[in-house]
Length: 65
Image 1 (tube, rainbow, N blue to C red):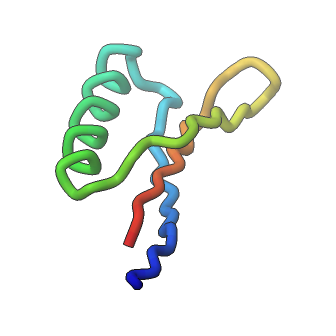
Image 2 (cartoon, rainbow, N blue to C red):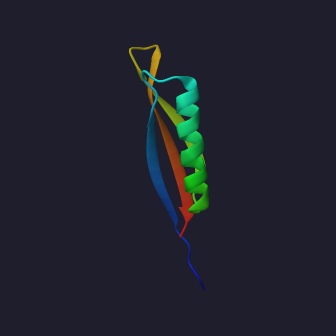
């Protein structure tokens, strides 16, 4: 019987001082690369600075190994 475990990884994307289009492009590239490597996006969490600006986005990925 094969036993599988779940592997997790977190990737950050910097958003501060960048246009939404630039951040979106980075997210698209990252998601395509991770999907091709067998990862699934589980969650995205913004990290807020100064109560109004998103500094980073944390992307949480998982895959079965």
